[in-house]
Length: 184
Image (cartoon, rainbow, N blue to C red; front, side, top):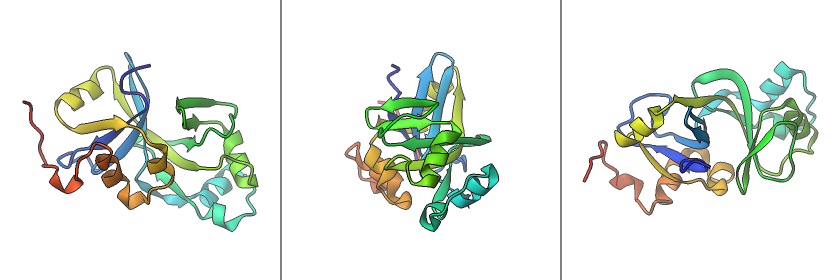
């Protein structure tokens, strides 16, 4: 396991890229070839109902169909990812941490639509990706803070407070963060 897996990447206030400004990204994979993460606080224009309709999946529960789909990142926005609690595994489930799983197969969406899916979940389209050494360079440039991922922030925190909640895990008041970091 890499030292950055199971971490939140928290965008520093000066990170101007609109894909990541005040973003919180769950780092799902990090190795010598690069990194992959899912941003957990960017709502897309889609609902689960839209996604189910596109995939021809029946969903009788209007409340489930009304749930938001997130923008997981700017790479391959047509690819879907489901972050979820470890209730069970589906066809392509991988553990991100002890209480967070990621699944990319259609069967988890079918289970969610039928009411037999995971107890807690977040559906995202796209992902954030970094090439070999790119994320490490961005960390050296103070573009990101990182802290251990917390399932309660992913699944329970209101979307608009996830950035502040992730910063608070570091024992920092988000209002005290300066736009530009430095080195001691």
